[in-house]
Image 1 (cartoon, one colour):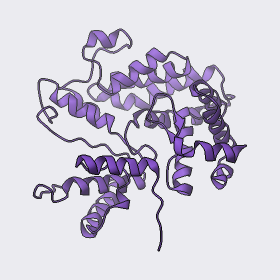
Image 2 (spheres, each protein chain N blue to C red):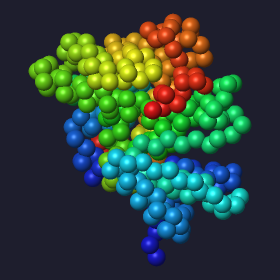
Image 3 (cartoon, chains in turn yellow, orange):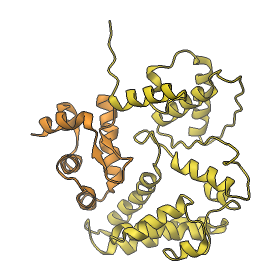
Amino acid sequence: MLSVKISRRESGALMNSLTAGVVPRIGLRHIAVGRQNEVNAFLHDLATIEDGGASFRLVSGQYGSGKSFLLQMIRNNAMERNFVVADADLSPERRLTGTKDQGLATYRELMQHLSTFTRPEGSALESILQKWISYLQTSITKARGFRPGAPEIVDAVSVEISEVLIDLSGMVYGFAFSSVIEAYWRGMKTGNENLKQASLRWLRGEFTTKTEARQYLSVDCIIDDQSWYEFLK
Amino acid sequence: MKNFVDALVPVQQKALYVLITSENPQSDLERIAEEELTMPQLLLDDINDLALQLMGDIIVDVTDQKPHILDEYIDLLKQSVA
C-alpha cells in the first residue's frame, strides 16, 4: 500500500483545525475528496485572471455543506499557480463599509492573510514588497554598472521607486503610498529598523492616527475606513 | 535532504548555513543578500520554494520575526551540510 508522508507542520495544522471544527488553511490536499467540477470551474477562473481578466463568484450552500472548505481548496490551488492570495471572513467587526474601523479591520485581515506558495499561512506582504524592489534594484544596478553593496544604490533605487510609482500619483493617496514604499527601502538599506517597521505598519493599516504615523513617516494620511479600498487597489 | 542541499545555488547554501548556525541570522542574511543583489526574504522564499519542489514541504519558518529552520528538519540538515 502506498504510504504518504505528511510533514509535522501540515499534520499539526490539520489536526488542530479538525479538532477545533474549522477548515485547515494548509495541507488540504491530504484530506480533500471530490468537488472536481467546482474546482475545475475555479481553475478556469484562475486561467482567466492569468490572462489579465477578472472573475467574481457567489457560492451558496447550507451550513456545513463545505463552502469554506471549497474556498480554502481554491486558495491552495491559486498559490500553487503562483498567485498572491488574500482572504478575509466578514463579520460584524469586519465589514466592507463601516465608521468604527470595521472596514479597516477587513483590510488588516486581508493584509495579514496575504499569502503566496512559499508563505501559505500569510504575512507575505514584506516578501512581495522585497520582490518588487529587488527587480528595480537589479535593473538599475546593471544599467548603471554599480557593484553590489555600492552606497549609490540606495539613492538610485529610491529615485527609481518614485519614478515607477509616479503613475499612482493620479490616484487618491498614490503619493503617500509611493513615499511609504521608498521609506521601507531606505529603512532597510540604512539599518533604520524603526523606519522599516513603521512603513510595514502603515501598509498593514496599523496606524490609528495621522499624528502617530507622522512621527515616523513623511505622510499626511493613514489607511482608514474611508480609504482602505483605495489602498487595496 | 542531501539532494535538496546539493540543488541549492551557492548563495542559498550560504543563507542556509547561517540559518543552521546562527540564533540571530537577520544581519548575516542581509549581508549575503546585498552581496548577491537580492533581498533576505527572497532568499528564504527561494530556499522554501526548492524545498517544496523536492521534499514537498518548506524548511524555513518565516512566520516569526526571526526566521529559523523547522525543528523537524534541523538534524537532517545539519547531517547533510556536515
